[in-house]
Length: 150
Image 1 (tube, rainbow, N blue to C red):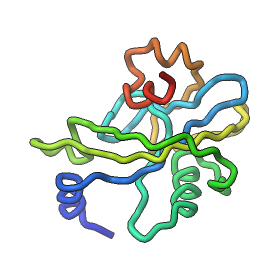
Image 2 (cartoon, rainbow, N blue to C red):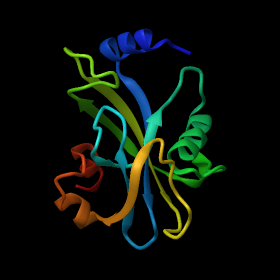
Image 3 (cartoon, rainbow, N blue to C red):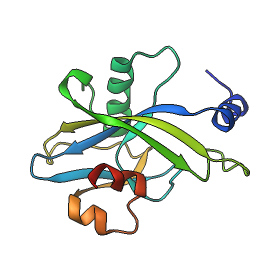
Image 4 (cartoon, rainbow, N blue to C red):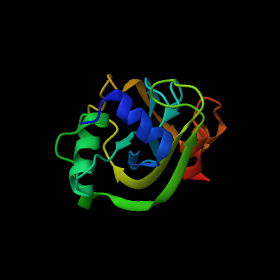
């Protein structure tokens, strides 16, 4: 495990690899969470997280689904690969000045029942289901999330 100072150096010098979960309810609604953490703090965003060094994609997917959604046994085989994206932010997790954060994102889509208990409130302050048109029209939905629906 990297110290915060070492991780800040990594963020300054390299892109991070992450997985985003585009969760739909089967009725054309997408799950978004209001981010508690930097970057993109306070905006509505699809759930997701970084892949750790030496972590398999399958292991990362299951861990991220649990950490972001509270779903214990979600497997990558049950999702559909949506594509590779780049996310760039002006800030970073520590709020350190002078550099932003660059992610290479593997996006996956999956369907969950909208009545299922979803959420990890240490990651997001609240969750909501929005239609594509609703999320594209809102100013508080982050542009990197909107890019999945354009």
